[in-house]
Image (cartoon, rainbow, N blue to C red):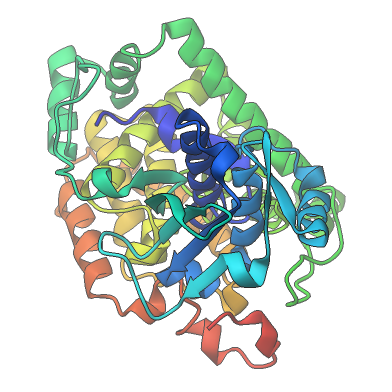
Length: 463
């Protein structure tokens, strides 16, 4: 299946693309299926079973509320984030929800939401089973979905199918590897963003592509602004203090006297986004929510500190980053539950490095080198969220990933693009490393910092 840049970058809500955005989409898809089958009137209740990583850390990632809103027909792109808590509380108080926004059914958390922490479904660790029952207890409809990272959801039939299928629609510059991507660049005598733009034209015209990419950038900027203006503590029980607003004010007071203040700004912007994400705010999945701060921070670095930066550069940046992102999506994974945080922060760092190298005048070979450097030095990165929350170490990890992406681009641009390790080799290595990584280091909050940080409230850890 062909992957568009608009599949990789979507506007949604926090705190997790795989544990919040994906489950909301799956629940909505199930509700729509019941409506299309004209089965809503026969449904008394819906039971949802969560498996693997979703069962372990779903509570800390807002999975339950995402599922409830999805069953009511809400989507991550459009849901009113200011009304989420109020609506979920109302469902729990009255013991009922409006299935597909149309038909009232009963709901009880203890009865209808089941956590299988020691079981996984066959195709991915983020599995969900939805079953609709009538008032006699008979199953009306059952479906299995997988949240495979970045907000992508597949059903059981698609998950078991061969992933190598013919693209639809046909793409003029199809590529499935970095080597093929460089070949396409040579064939069109253009850049990586040129190749990606040619493929995007299979869905949209140039005006629509530009408008949608700039809309994504506007959403990223809005998220940074919100994050830099809000103080207080993040929800979830860890009492993590929001720091971006104070850091931002401090940097403004200091001015430009510190030669490394540029990197401080990059860190502030990344932290601001991921504090918003941790609070359940509106973010751009890029390519996941857990790594949502890296690309906005590097793009703001480009717009503020690179001479000649403009909206055309933003468009080219996102197209080049998207080209690299789809390589990870199709050849490895962007799911922390599948390959650890190397698949989230590592992929985002690689994508951001490629985007920056592209708009700073890099050749296709230099851009590919920047992407390779960005991932090579994130290999083995575990996903070990303390308390099952996307806060520690996730927020600071985005700041580190953004700074690393800038450095990767600058290193690549110092050379001519020739390098020892190819991007294809490093993507394969990331995939293999993820497969070898113990499950406790893959978004289950059962290893690493999640169990070694003292003073974490026991009731926060969903193990």
